[in-house]
Picture 1 (cartoon, rainbow, N blue to C red):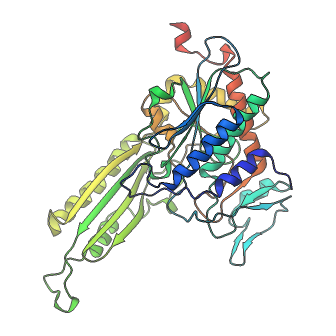
Picture 2 (cartoon, one colour; picture 1 turned 90 degrees about the vertical axis):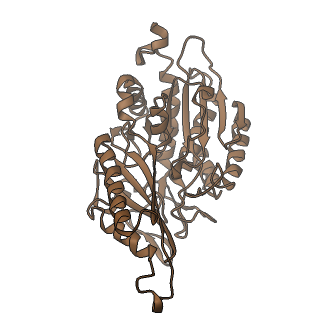
Length: 418
């Protein structure tokens, strides 16, 4: 079948293994992300974007010059190139399901995508879906966002009668490991407001995210032959198990929803002699977020008193903050993305995002950046899929946002009223 260009682009990008790593001494955390960055730069040049470049940190950027005069806000669109370290992204082989009939989708002989587990599939009967082959993730998060932004820029270039100001785009590495904009130069990017495309199903818009932190606990044990271990062995694994038992059992991702926060045991590696565990700490409420960090600090302090101060090390790094509090003074940029969705025939809805985006950190640093849907479902695993129609609508929303900023009544830009 002939797929829309946004779907073709997505499939091409999905085949790149651009998985990031939690523990790495480099930035980006994996060099293979740079291969996709160079491909994106090539594609941006082909469609006619200006000032296309990949910088030393792997950020791939480009500019679409304004086609109208006037003091119009400069808008940015961002998406991330990497896929989660939590599931394999090697040899991704996207599958096309035409005219979905509402039943089970056999991904392979051992894996079935079923409406019993994914009831939202019923919303896409008759549509074309892109799925995995059951062996890898698909990479909708966030290669769909990447493909949608580039396709929207191409659409605006090919339809020069649609007015727009200067638009800048950026594709970032390492978002999935909480370092997506660690070295991103906001001033150099040079936009007034921005949007990430890193959201959920069609119509979902986000201006609230979690506050997020990564906790790393290292336990230095002492390995002795188990037959001679009495009063000598210190089992690092046992101590980490003890730490996990001290965290609230009902405050884990699998038991929480909506604005309920959690502790998430993310990775664990090691042996009796040394063991390292990483935790995600998440909460929408900033006070509860701080309390969660204190809880894990207190638990570690207790174990230090019990087993020895030099036995356990804890490092907590804040990754991002809830963008809501910084966006409250510029909510017109949220209104514009809602208006854009309505004007392209979508019924938008707001949802507190149970995750973080590059935009959460950018907003905290002074660049207001709410989040737009990319259209997919079941991210980070082999049941991931995306309806093609949803991707097409995301393209239309981006193009419409660019147009709406040329009409002054849609915003109250301080630079124009000073």
